[in-house]
Image 1 (cartoon, helix red, strand yellow):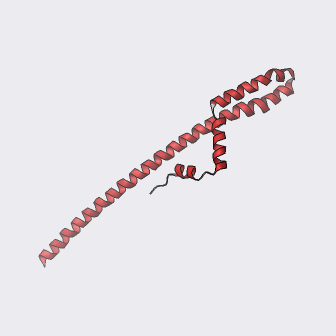
Image 2 (image 1 turned 90 degrees about the vertical axis):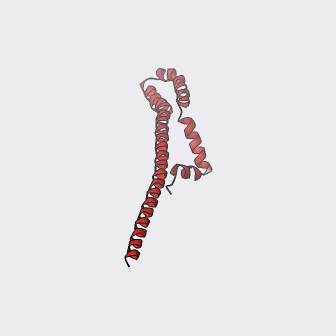
Image 3 (image 1 turned 120 degrees about the vertical axis):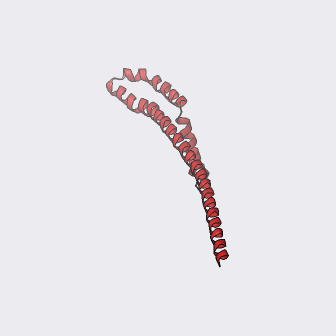
Length: 127
């Protein structure tokens, strides 16, 4: 029988894995990205007063790390969900295909047995 790897993965997570996934799910939301944007913008006026080096530091350390990384996580979460849905659909297709193949094999076996029985009857009747 085909394996449902998504189900197996979820069943094999330890408590630390579950905690990491929980945090990732929270940080990987648009609400968190909005909160990080507001937090970053609070420090922007002070960065503007500090000169070029401070502005570059604010962009690199505050804006990129807080805002863009959380938005990248959102995209990765969406891609991951899509992959999981695809894997679930593949699993269901494999299960259905396996049943259909088993039905076809069963029909072929019954056809072969019928033909063999007829051949045996013909042979018996000729002897």
